[in-house]
Image (tube, rainbow, N blue to C red; front, side, top):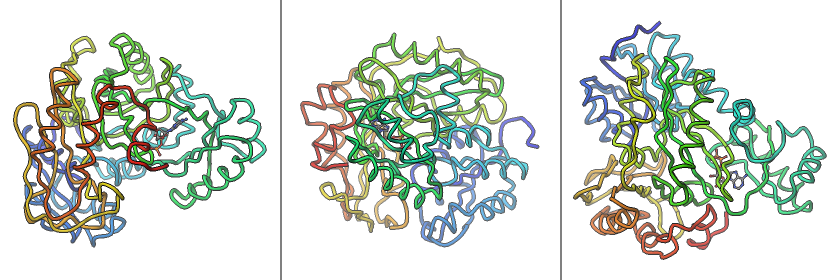
Length: 452
Ligand code: ADP
């Protein structure tokens, strides 16, 4: 078993901006880093900056970034003592976490048991129900038959949503507005779930017509201490995928944040949860309804860091090494407002992928501007992976200042040679409805003229 004490060398089992993000935290803590990479990423920024690097396979993710044997071998030969999984790839794979620990490395994340529990959304909802966290009305567990689905839909009333137990990335999710649409939704959701996750178990939720997506960032040590770092509003989504995130939410009061925060931290402390986690809720008519928990660092964690003045990756490293949090909930305060725009290598109108060579890259700067990106001039964005190329994050005294800062930063940013979503973000920031803060999860789909 891994022995407590701060890590000397961390292997980062990821790529792109998040690999860089983890590397930066390690470097400031005098921890050496090992990058792993596919042959397509030999010249990637995370490989260039890490202290050591190991090629773990060909471009396809299943042969490299998902290749558990190659990653564990890389950790062994480089003498790493911990593995940080980033987000995506193996970050929510309970067997991977188990294997990492079985091989004597620390896994920088929760226990395999909690990853497994929260990865099954039905088990996750059960756990939250027991902890007294409010849920979206729906089926008590998996739906066994179409008849059962009909009965639950009659009880909770249409519209309803059929969701995959193993779901992620918005896949395996279908709405039925009325009884006529139920059979089709049931069939399509199950087929999609089977194809995407190899598991066709589905459950049902009431489809909320105008919710906001509000999530809570938590951090727990191994000694039962749990705190939250407030909420992020991620209501700006296209096809259930987040594009813009804010901290705090324009819709929430400090008292509402405190109430849900207290409930969640008490629940997770009872559960014995450790490391970082995010509880995702829908928020409608002043009510929180839990939808899922992510047992890892989120893409949008920087907005929380900006308003709380905390480095969440350093906190993850500290608690994974067995340190106590060393502060209490009342020591955490929230200052100003932060916004993140996810810049992807996609056409801003059609969202068609646009990988390729970046001739010129220029990152904006100035007070309150942060860019998390692995881009550089001359870098070729490979076609094999996620299209996220930069996270542009700003912090301001107020939401209005953050918006004007984001508009200024977007106008300075240059990513020349590929198409990116920069112009779309500029249009969103200029929109009066976005500026008013009054929007739901459905707003962006209408704004870009698409149906989910
Ligand atoms: P995934 O894990 O696939 O991302 P989630 O359960 O996190 O699935 O849901 C993703 C998004 O889908 C939410 O942020 C929200 O926009 C929408 N959604 C999920 N459940 C509901 C619901 N019951 N009613 C309305 N929208 C929902």
